[in-house]
Length: 429
Ligand code: AMP
Image 1 (tube, rainbow, N blue to C red):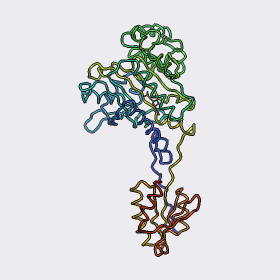
Image 2: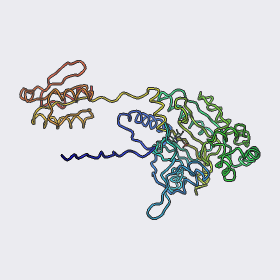
Image 3: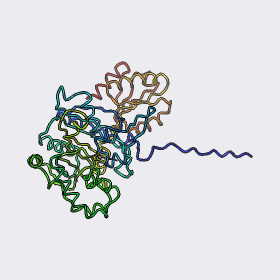
Image 4: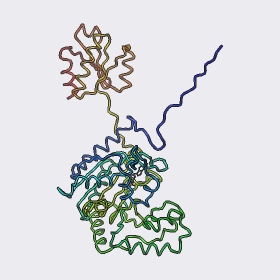
C-alpha cells in the first residue's frame, strides 16, 4: 500500500505590521470618512490626492535627517534606474511639494487641503502601531494668524465630538521660531553639558545635528535626565508669545479643553510655534490619536516662496480603535430583500428583477445555486434580510408572487407585470 502524504501548503500571510481591514470592520472607517469630509467641506478644505511614492530627498529634507522617521523608519529603495524612492511616511511633505510644484501660491496662496490614506513607517508593531497605517490629514497654507491654529484644534475636537469620543485631551505647546530657537538651543546645550554620560548614543549623535530632537527620545534613562530640561515655552520671542497667547485665549473662548504641555516637541523637524497632540486614555502606550503643528519655514525650505503653513494628522487606525472600545460602531446595514426563485423560469425573471431593484438603490440579493426553499430561507436569515420574495412555478402560474416581511411574517401577493415598480414603492416609502 502506498501512502501519499500530502504536504500541507503554508498559506500566504500579510507582512509584519501590515493588515487587512475586513468588510465586517469597515463601517466605522466609513462613518469617520463621511463625518470628516462633511466637516472639512464646511470649513472650506478641498480634497487632494498625493502619490504614495516620492523621492527620498523630499522626506529627509522636510522631516529632518536626525529624526526617528528618517533615520530608522522609512521604506526606502532604489528603483530600476537607481533613483532613491520612499513610501510616504506622512502627508505634509508631499502636500507642500504639490503646492510648490503646481505654483498654487501664484493664483491663490491661501489654500486648505485634506487627504486620507495610508502611510508607511517601519516601527515595531504593536496595538495601535502598524507599519502601514492610515491618516486623515489637513493642511492650511498662507495664513500666519493664530486663529488658524485655534481653528485646526477646534476642528479636531469638533470631529471627535461628532464621533462620540470621550476621554481625550488636547496638549498644546509652542516650539518658537528661528528667532527664539538659538536662545533655547543654548540653554538646552548648557543643561545637558554635564549629563552627557547618561544619554544614549542616539542622543549624543543628535546633539550636533539637532539638539531639539533629544527631547523626543523614548529611552527611559534619557527621559529621566531630560525631565527638568529647559522648555521652548520659556524662551519664546515676543511675537511667538503673542501668537501662543491668542491661540490659548481663542480656545478658551470656544470652550475647547486643553493642557499646556511644555514637554511636547513632536518628532518632526519642520515645526515652528504651535504644536499639539490629542491624547486618549483608552489606548495604553499609543496614546496620541492626532498631532499637528505650524511649519512656517517648510514651503521656503522646499523651494517655494516664504509661505506660512500649518496642519494636523489624525491616526485613523487609532481613532477607530478608540471608537470600537467606546462601542461606537454603527449597525451593519441589513439586506432589504432576498429573492427566492425556484426553477429556471423564476430564476431568469428573478435575475432581471434583482438588477432593476439594485439599480434603484434597494439592497437585493439572490442565490443562483439552485438550492431548495429551505436552504434559501436559511440564507435569507443569515443575510439578515428584511423581506423575502418567493417565486416558484406555482406563483408564476397564478401570477401572485409572495412578499414576506421576515420580522412580522406578514405576506402580500404581487402580480408579475408590476412587481418591480410595486417593490420600489414599498421600499422607497
Ligand atoms: P505624526 O505624523 O507622527 O505626527 O502622527 C500623527 C498621528 O498618526 C499620531 O498621533 C498617531 O495617531 C498616528 N500614527 C503615527 N504613527 C503610527 C503608526 N505607526 N501606526 C498607527 N498610527 C500611527
